[in-house]
Image (cartoon, rainbow, N blue to C red; front, side, top):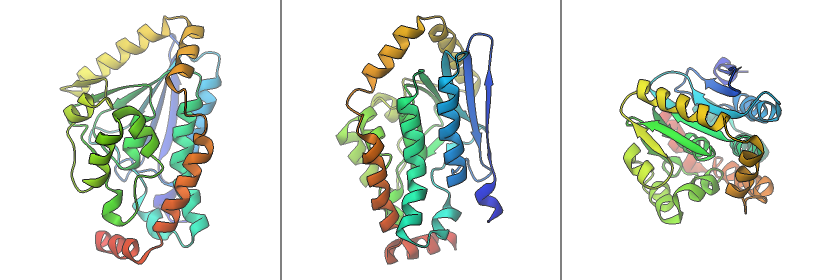
Length: 256
């Protein structure tokens, strides 16, 4: 297997307040190949079930890009619909892991979020960002669409704003735009201020009644119970489109 598809890592740490931090990294702008998506989803599920965990912070490493979405190299390597559906189902696994996790998940977005990265940010329960955390759903540019992440993004920002992001696929929207539309709860000028705000908020949540937080989480995600099947069906759409001549040619142009 290509080394770039197996590169990256997911790490966890829990402090004495019960705040668990899940951090992911990939050398290609924190893009997420299938192996890393599976590991991230499994880690969110496992940490969410641990008795010591009161609240979770989900973050990536580095100071440039929060998550560049799908692994470009892995997209290029997809050979049939089944393989494509399995790959795009990786994002479905992460979103559904966040959705079904019984603990509140705080997002920490320090830089740009692209494609699936926007979906990961949208799957958190309360998201902090910096002014550099611009967002773009670029899938249409290469002939697919934000089908898997769409329900999570639309849930946060509404159908009209989702349509803006999805259709204006070549352009970034600012962090302020994302905050005004509900993707981010707060936007900070620097990473230091971001981390201070995330740490303080996590401490507050960790001091609250865990039973109340668990019940509130269920209320916040009410109406999404069908996503286990919906997101996999959406992955099938992307898995089919990624094999189209349009997408193959677009990927080759980007590669060149």
